[in-house]
Image 1 (cartoon, one colour):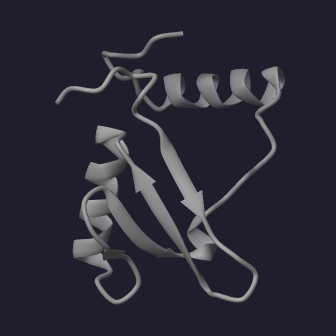
Image 2 (tube, rainbow, N blue to C red; image 1 turned 135 degrees about the horizontal axis):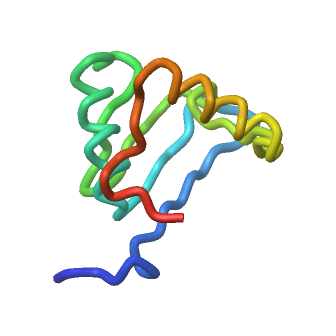
Image 3 (spheres, rainbow, N blue to C red; image 1 turned 30 degrees about the vertical axis):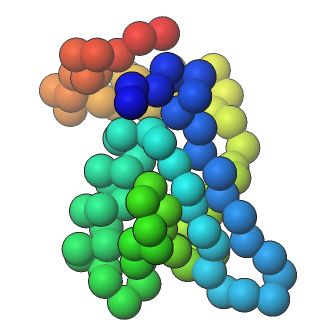
Length: 91
């Protein structure tokens, strides 16, 4: 069954008592990344059923958004280094 982008949700659950978080997702890119990380770090990132992984809480991060000034500076540095945006980049 193919899910729409709207239906490809990600749910991250954790509590204060445990050191791990549960990540449930239908996002294909995130699933690919979690699978790759679970192969690289099998003791820390473990599959826990279809579309679900157990990860250390330290992997869950909420950070301040980039300011327009910081974004432009990062873009200029990337251009000087010869980096190009991904082909499927959509703004």
